[in-house]
Length: 178
Image 1 (cartoon, rainbow, N blue to C red):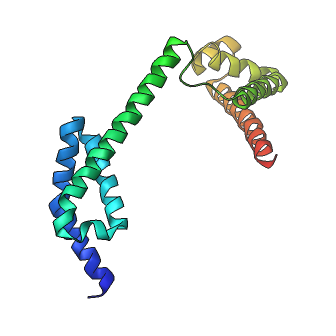
Image 2 (cartoon, one colour; image 1 turned 60 degrees about the vertical axis):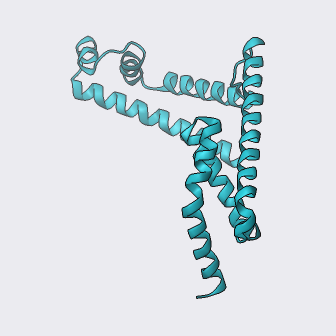
């Protein structure tokens, strides 16, 4: 067995024995299974990177529990700061998610391109599409009102969607290339 394999085996044994204790200790403070699991995993990642901390059986027990306690306290401190920040946003009436100005511009550009694409469609295609999407009419209702077959209405809506997909695809390709 090589030195690395031996170290890995030792760590596995150490993990099997210690992980449940570490997780239980974190859970006692946090009262959250998921958070305790995350903290225990973080602790063992740090321990794997620092074998001198767990290879000596005489010191690892107290040191690991100190690590867990500190990690939990840092976690709780971070959570309290996050909660205070969210409360301040709510008090100041600031939305938790503010869109980037570029996102808003891109959305307006796409909206304009869609409108222009629909406006350029042949009248029958445009009418069928708008009746379907804007008015929520079924293909049968559109066919009856426009005196067309249902298949023709389906074809107009399909072609309208293809036109829109091409426009949006070209827009995104343009954004990627710039």
